[in-house]
Image (cartoon, rainbow, N blue to C red; front, side, top):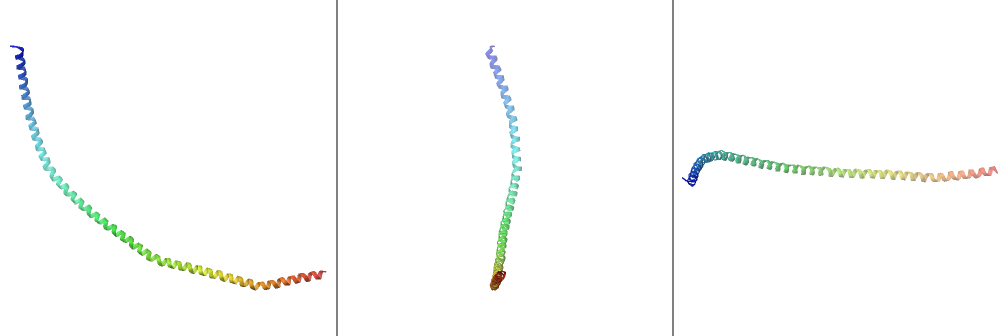
Length: 153
């Protein structure tokens, strides 16, 4: 027997053992893939109803959000209407108040002007009546002064 025959026999034995090892590995892998397939099927069977329930829940939440949005829009419109009503009432009340205030200010100024003119007229009348008296007093004083001056000479 030659060394080449021994090498060929060793190589053949190695290849047979490798084939058996690979066959065992493939059988084990087939079992793993079978379990993986059944796990994926179970997960799919469980997840699909959960996703359907989640979709139903999200649809309900979206409907509620739409309702809340409608309520908010209605509330905003109501607030704007109330604001317009308050502005209308305020302008309806403030216009007569402004008119009365203007009339009162005019009457006050008119009375102040009337009183000031009356006082000025009274003062002018007083100064006119006292002017001749002043002239007489001044003339009397001048005559007295001249009489005193003559008497002393």
